[in-house]
Length: 305
Length: 274
Image (cartoon, rainbow over all chains, first blue to last red; front, side, top):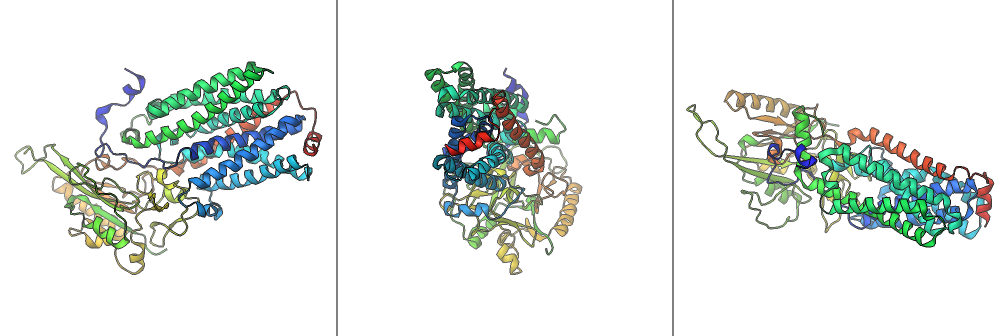
């Protein structure tokens, strides 16, 4: 008998014709998970650009500035296309609403997109370097927020596999963002100067792997959707690719082949993580068991799941 | 705000006529939601959604119930209940809406402004009751308004108006709560201990529902969550964890470059000029 089965007794669970209690997230593929990846990559790259600037790693700083700007711009495009009424995308900035992670996130992304675009444009054109430096310094704040606010966004829902993981998801997303940005840096910088990007990739992959494992363990039966079906396959692929890519990055050194393999594996792993998170959220919402059983246990004074 | 208005849906007198569903569709000019045979008793609507703002649930139970005092009569029980948006005191849909399209009316109800909603879809998985949904051909989110337009005109909502048994009662929430407590007491006195109120308590996870129910079985049997909690209750904690994770992003990158800080701020200037 598997661990998850033994913790959810089938007989104690009643429902209305097996129908879901809550509505599943309606966000589309590939838009939403790809945005999660791009936002993470952009935010991590901004942080690399800031520190690389201080440390005098010019080639890496330049690549990271450009990656951050491209990621934020493409991500914002995907988010707009995701809307039911794309022509109303500016309504996102109609109010600033602290109770809505999407409102806060829209402002963060607007700042990140604008600042990273200025930083990349001044880098590429060589004009107004002081403005560009100020902009990239500011992305030292907006970048990490861009990489992690999305975890709050998905956790602030009634979806049990997401809400229950609100402690670990930010670290999973942060790790994934660092691995993505490290991979982008490795692929876009001459290998002799990509050393710190490789370290970022290794540490990010480790953070993503560890926080994912902690999340699934602590969620218990509510974490089942991360192990079953399509979401399970995506999360397993993500783990293998991320761990493999991280190990390769640690030994890649200046090898062209290993660097390419590692960078691509980490990128694919980060994408699998993001698609897997959405798939697990949908599966978690679709089965009333994950909504009803923990709530019933809470009412009956049992261990809250 | 004027007095907070609400629904008290007493399912013990619901006869499953679906007049509420029809009246709602008619008044609010809602499109059809598909013509399907669900094979779930008399329920061919399924669940609340973007174009279904009242949904009558039918539950056929073969559990024996006590009849006229001479033991179990083996009588089947047929539960019917008209579900609706709960108009929560702490409404997750309203909290997470990024545009301000969802708002709290002067009647204490929660309503979507259709000229503001940009269809981001965040309210859909945020609702702990699975009420609000996006109409895909229209792109916007829709749900029960408790007939905001009728209320402003001094009329009761269409569903309550049409209900032939007063299973759906509309009025000031305080008054409805008193009425429900009386009704519960009399049902218990009649020997129906299974009767219970759902969503009436301001102490529950959503701060009490503006539309609450008298049920004859556990909420999950009707497709309702047994102990719903507004997700934003944990939002401050969520931001703290995310803040720590954001700091870890900065920390990891700083560690990755440690030992290599030769440029100082001048590193920026050189980088910017090339």
